Image (cartoon, rainbow, N blue to C red; front, top):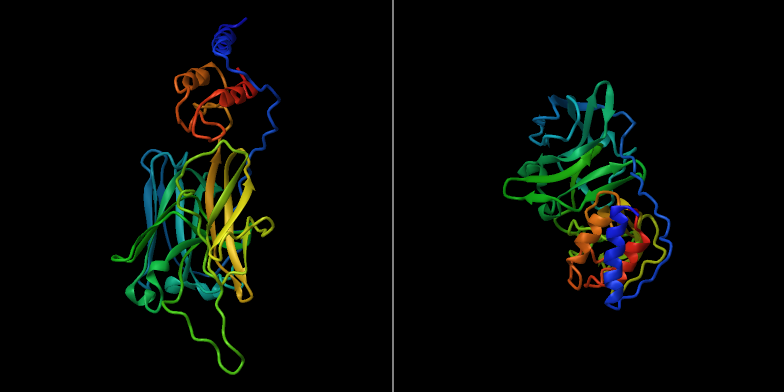
Length: 348
């Protein structure tokens, strides 16, 4: 018997003597979460371009200052790339792009520009990075005139879903007209906002209508945490004018506790994944909002890819406590149920 296994057996016997019972069984099959492609392969007429070089040791920055007064920049931290990388930012006039990547109804592109971010190293196009990079967009007072500045958000074009996806995590500085987001991939980006006031209903042909606003996730879900659960209830707010909410492109299973709330239980793949939500009504669909989640492997407390004696030692000292890293069923206490799950997932 190996030393590791002997240590494990001794600790198990200790718990058994204490009167704890176990529910042994085969763990369910785990599926790795796939990554959606967000690279853009179509080509557009570029207005202006700025370029520069970043490296793996110091990182670097590139900024595009357009003739309109709007700017777009990217800042790479050390370690975001693995080699010297050429980075470019190009501006594209909105009118040249809407037929291929239509803007969500009810939104306006601030400054009228869409930005194409690209990176290349050793002759290869890079669309994802080892560390998040920071994108900063600035606009002028004139460009935000007539728009609701508090609604300014950054969107990116997802070619898999063929939709503009909103960044749920952002920093908006309305005093200096700047919005900032962090991302680990490059594609097309744009800042969009809704009108500052709702337009009046149309005359003659009947009353006009408005598309619903983009739904939200409840703040308790947007915490950058993790889960061990194979499925989880997601919920948030929606416009009362929305007829339906779509979660990951389907409205099946979505329920509405109130006229302004939505919820749905979603199956979670192991690793990092996303949940995408948008609303629709007879006049069109809202923009989409995306929440990123991380589902951990049960028992792997130290996140080294194995469930072994080291995880067990961390588990034991937290017995009877409310410690999320070992609370595999998320009931608020580390107890015999978690221990039985650890045994089921043991890799040694």
